[in-house]
Image 1 (cartoon, rainbow, N blue to C red):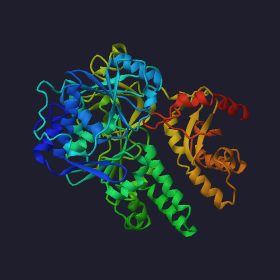
Image 2: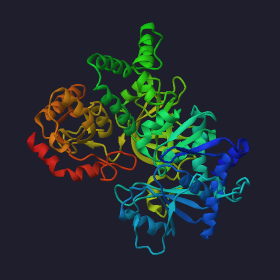
Image 3: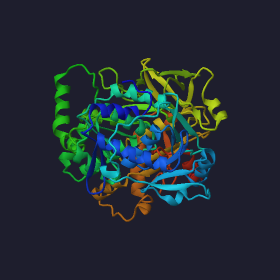
Image 4: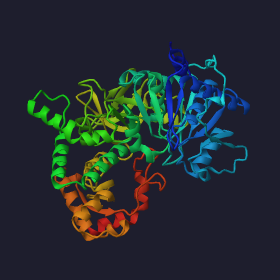
Length: 580
């Protein structure tokens, strides 16, 4: 059957199989499961709730979710089936931005996840009614068993959802996506996912991320079993518990997984540590399309099935692919995981593109580490105002490109050309005239006073190869050289200090320890030796607080917010240049 609106996905699954378990939710003491039939019942339950609120076609309903849950998914799908519009807002939205969203949407009903801090969304808007976004795993919520029939006049052009960007700078913008926008992404992604009705996928990113939401719909269309991880502290155990075949992640999660493996290794014998380091060095050089060489393939077998056997077990043994997006992933990590038998496929997208634009494929020859792959079927990209290195601003065109920004016609006109190209604001170049490589955000690129261009995101990923650097912000706009703000990987640092017989007191005091600073200086020198002179970091400051979404240093997608770092540590940055 052809799909004309999002709720058609469930109608299709009901026609294929009504009884097999399809959705699972972690509820503290185990997993609750629902069949396709029970999913349909849950959907009817939320349809009745919406209809009881006297809501009509086209009405806007705000959802403030955390991770994906039964309730969150059912409500969103019920809204789609009734030709209403779900407005997704990040749980990290600040008060001022929240007030702007309410003023702009005039929404009267807000559904908020129980795990979200509600105090942040207290408002003086007396017309707004809050509802708890909850659903117990009980099929008796609704005994109605009829197949969900979508509203007849919901088609591909109908507005499906408005997803508000994080609004870290300026006014938040509501990205309007039609049913057709999202279905185009789902249709293009499904053939690329090595999944079927026997597969298990783990959902762990916030539901307000367009990336996770579209993937969940793609998983549903593929008929896979979807596991909603509502408690991220259970992530490591969930991998070993459900043995997923795939999940989506931001690079920060991959980096943390690797750091935990290194931390565990630090407690092993010297011989085991040497073998692991050798395996890592070999893994980081892994090339999937290398010519057959008995020695190289022998090494790969040894690495994959013996040395990394425990690591693979921690990932659940069955894991085939991790889909990575939202920020730059260090290519060495991609190679390392692939050498261990877990394929990492990096992609690129934006909320405005529903969101996937390009992705590396599973097929041989269609994946290149260090790039974000090739465009999806039906999607075009072009580079505008290319520099001497072939890098230019990325423009996107296709059925996945948004309708525009809600009630912000001027902002829409700034980013969508008269002939339908969307200006992403990202800068990239093509490798082998095929694979897109993201250089940086256009607004984040800067020149030093010597006129040398710096791409801070790419450069940061190089320095984060050090196991002692957890987060780093490269600074140097209109300066003669670069300095850095660094948050240390304290777990790895504590293990090092223990081996060196250095007494550990408290993290905030240890960053002042001369031996710690000397260690970091040596790490930075090793990395500087691999870089061009203008890319070298000359001085650094160790920040005392861990960057997070809550303290405003990370975005909702766990990317460092440059201006927030520069503002908070303005004094320390100035002192770095004085000290040098």
